[in-house]
Image (cartoon, rainbow, N blue to C red; front, side, top):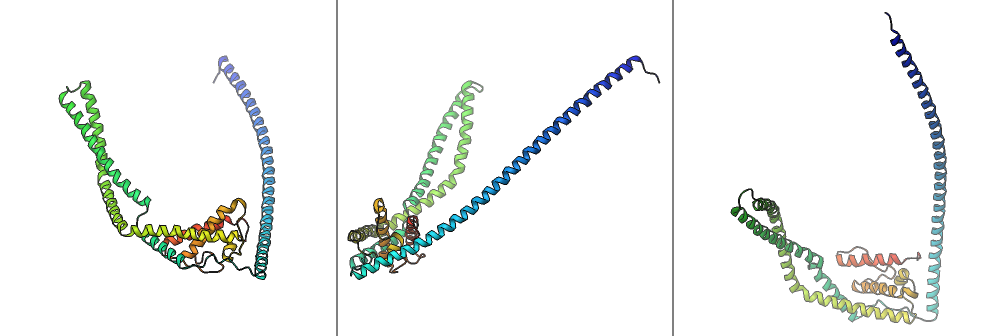
Amino acid sequence: MTYSVHDGQDLERALRTLRQRVGELGDEIEETQSRHRSLDAQVDGIDDRVGALERTQQELEETQEGLHESMDSTAAAVRSLAATVGWIERRLHTERDIPAADVDTADDVLRQLATRARQGQQSAAVLLDESARARHQRQIDDLTRLEQQIRETVAAALQHSATLATTEPGSAGHVRAATQYRALARALAGYQGQLPAARKAAESARQALKIDDEHRQVHGPQVMTGESAHTQLMTRVRDRLDTAVADSALLPAWLTLVLGHQPVGEDVDKWMNTATSLLAYRVTYEVVDPVVALGEPTHDDPRREKWHRDLGRRLASRRHWPI
């Protein structure tokens, strides 16, 4: 086989090109290796920083544990100090013949008010609350709006139907009327699809409101009497507390354990409001525990449980010191 001079020149150029490409690839490999070494160095630096952060986190966790232990120790000391102060105060009052304020002993008037308040709450439990009545009324209003939308849609569709009947097919007016008619027909189908469920919900709502209206005729006066009695009860127990605090009387243990011995500074209103609600609760439900302010936590009466939970949250939020 013989090769022409032209073929030899082509082969030589191809070899030169190949050598040049091999050289370029060598440069690229060297550059890639250099980048790889740089990335390795960066990764090593990141590992060092991660290690330092982990050590810092561990130190912070150890510091936090130490703080918790310190806080627990401080809390125990404060509890002990509070108990000592309370004991000293009571001893001083006893030695000076200062009687404890008898703020939660219910007389006949308070007992009657508490009884009427409880009866009012029991009657109110039979009635729908305002949010439930509003929800039922919305269901009735939703049906009214849906029926109105259906009437308006049918009327508009009839207008476009009349236009279709009186205009030439293909004319601008005819085309517009046809487009509007189809859109209204689709909307009407959607509204009619919603109608059965809306009617059922509205009927149930009407029945619920009707029954509630009947209950209100029977229980309404007792609910109003109970609300009035509760207001009077709150006023009377507040007067008792105002007098006891103004006289610097020795408050009962169940009160001082959860609220302290007296209100201080700008905290007076909150202290008095919480103490008044707490005292009214004890009188209303005849709680006589000398130490536990709220007595037993669970009851069959949901309104009592709600009041109990509310007072528990208010008392918990006030415990800035663990006493």
